[in-house]
Image (tube, rainbow, N blue to C red):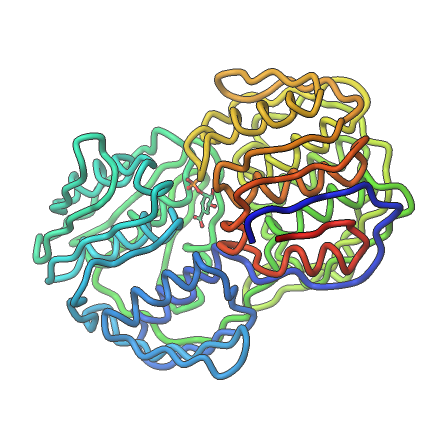
Length: 433
Ligand code: S3P
């Protein structure tokens, strides 16, 4: 899919399930591979990023069967059973694969190389390499601190206490995974709450992890026991429909079985504060993760100052939150979100440029954006190969004054291959070519 064209819609309706959570899918393969025994996974996200993780473990000798769509049978090899891959490990667009794998690979007794696509090879890796070096890992990057990453096997790791300079679940997870192989205790202190799927899933595999406020600790030398994982639908994918339902008149959508882990629900809180008609139905716990069906109805949104403490809890949803702000009455101000500048694209700049070109009063700031809501014109948008930018502008087209054409949409398949089908199915006037 090269291009998406999004035209105004008269209303969105339907009850459906978006694909599986990307973060949980990655971790299910990683921990399943390192466990003793066979882990059964259902609801796995069959999209490029999570499949990249799957392929790297297959190339390190892990047998992973795929009996049905979304179902995996991971034959764990134990913490010390991975084999040296014959080739470099290519993880495509996936920052989660690269950063989490660097922690696991640092603990192996073989050498390995991690590479990625043009976007990933520009993204900062020192944030994991510096603390890994403090643990004793031997990892080389380019001079700019980017991939390829060359990881030398056999370096003994020792636990550290590390105060993270930025809120990042990928950095935290990398260190906890390296901590499985380290002598003693590895402790990570977070400046802001970030998604805790690694901690939750490690516990699900019977591996103790201690959380005390902003501090997470793990001891090396244990074992993981295979388990069963039901991956909920991804709230980050659901977010496109939450905003879509709010901004489109005559809409009433229910998204089924969505993960509502409290470290991920910032987008719901932000939309509620903006006046979104969103309700959580049938709340339950599935495999240790909170899940609900989420109903969204047409709403008159108003601008808000997004509270800083919600930023890390909604970090992947800002592209579409900016679209919500463009349709809201009044001003929305986002601060403390400088991490958006180092995602698959610089999401502050790409969103501000795109919104400006659609006539929206949007101003990029170093750590966020100021948007004065109003009319959105039609136009042509560059997605900069960023899946979430592409999908956010498809949502923007729902109530724009003309068609919005979005270029370079191939990477939608990294997280949400069925986006166009599901969107068209509930009433988007969306086509792809
Ligand atoms: C992720 C953490 C976040 C998020 C990414 C997935 C994870 O990245 O943006 O899409 O699965 O741990 P950061 O850790 O860089 O914030």
